[in-house]
Every structure is written in structure tokens, then in C-alpha cells.
Length: 312
Image 1 (cartoon, rainbow, N blue to C red):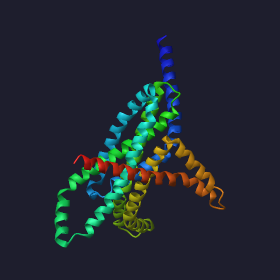
Image 2 (cartoon, one colour; image 1 turned 45 degrees about the vertical axis):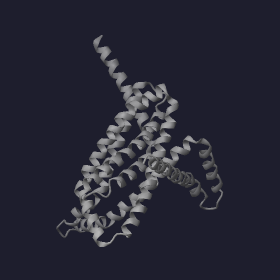
Image 3 (tube, helix red, strand yellow; image 1 turned 60 degrees about the vertical axis):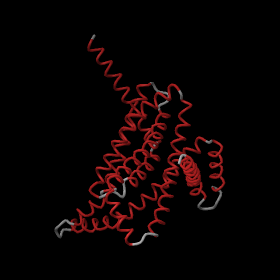
């Protein structure tokens, strides 16, 4: 009797795990687009720190991401069970925050460039000395910013995954969301660590000794990686900022159904162009979402600036 009960329990566990694996695959496919944006965003968020501090910074952000998901998974289940109507407004608030951060980054970059152009040599030396003192604070701010951005993207990933498992029981929902949270975090930050250390891989390959074919090819590949690393990081910085507006704007327009439908209609209009119609139809919603995100970020930054001035 005890043996039969044990077999029944094992069968139930196997069934649950099978259901969780199937739903996790579906959820992973649906969140693949956000995962790409998450990767680009986090890679550019941790760029700019000292080379020897890159992996510690990535690890610090990864731990923050795990903490985010430790909060988000139970919170998503509670909200879905008791106040499901709150999911969309909360996501829209997060989307607006992403747009705000993206536009603030652009504004800061523009004003910082103007300030640098107005500095004389003495001021430059003083500024460099101050920057050296502020490196630790700069690194901490980078980590905090990356964790804040990760919170919004993680919330979207969890929300999309929750939609996949909405019809399942609570245990399957919890297990599926947990699997997605762990796999996505490990995958994203593993790739981010690889990206930020690609120049070190290049140096390692380039220093190999020997005259074999593979050794020479390794040195050639290492040199190419070293030369490509700065351009890759600059590209990720641009792509990451664009992704902020695309993801944030997409979340906002998804909540504002009228605008979302208008963008879909625009996609249908451009599809009638010869030859490139299909390409234009595919990218039009993303481009319009990004532009909407830029406008939303500009408005949010203007409002925050006014509030800060009123508060003195």
C-alpha cells in the first residue's frame, strides 16, 4: 500500500514537471524578444567600468536580478489572483520609467558633451582627479541603474510568462515562473559576462605561441576580437538605449489600445509598398513604439524637472 502511494506520488510529480517543462518552453519562446532587449540593455549598462571590475559588476547586477525576481514571482501570483486589473497599469508605469531613463541618458550625454567642450586644461585635470575619486560611486550607480532597469524588464518577462500559465493551478504557475526566472537570469548575465570580457579573450588568443595553423588562426582571431571589442560596446550602448524606448514605448502602447491599433493599421498601410513592403510592415510597429517611447520619456523628464524645481 505504501509502495503504491509512493508510485502515485512520483507519477504526480513527473506529470507536474512535464507540464512545467512544456509551459516553460512556450513562455521562453514568447519572452525571447524581451530577452534580446534585456541582453543589450544590461551589456551597455555595465560598460564603462574598469576592466578588472567588469565581472564583479556583472555578478552584482546578476544578484540584484535574482532579488528582483524573488520579489516579482510571488508578487505576480498574488496580483494575478486578487487584483489582476492592476497588472497593466503597473507594467505601464514600468514602461514609462524605462522611457524616462532612456531620455535622461540622452539628455545627460548631450549636456555632458557641452560641459566637456567648455573646459580648459586646468579644469580638465581637476575633473579627472575628481573622476578618479568618484570611480567607486560611479560603479555603484551603474549597478543600481542596471538593477532598476532589470526590474522593469523582469516584470515584463514574468507578466508574459504568467499569461502562458494563467489557466494552470497555482503550483504549476509558481514552478514555471521560477524556471523562467532562473534560466533567463543565468542566460542573460552569462552572455553579458562573455560580451564584456571578449577583449580579454582576444588578448589571450593573440598571445599564444607557436606556428601551427590553428595557433596562427587563433592569433588572427584574437587580434580581430581586440579591434572589434570597442565598436561592439559602443554598438551595444546605442542598441541598449534604443531598446529602452522600444520596450518602454511598446508597454505603453499595449496599455493604450487606441494607439496600439493605430500602429497596427500603419503597419498594414506600408505593407502595400513593392519589394520592401513586408520588411516595412515588420519593423513599423517597433519604430513607432520607439518614437512614442522617446516622446513619453521627454515628457516624463520635463515633468520630473519641473517637480524638482518646485521642490527646490
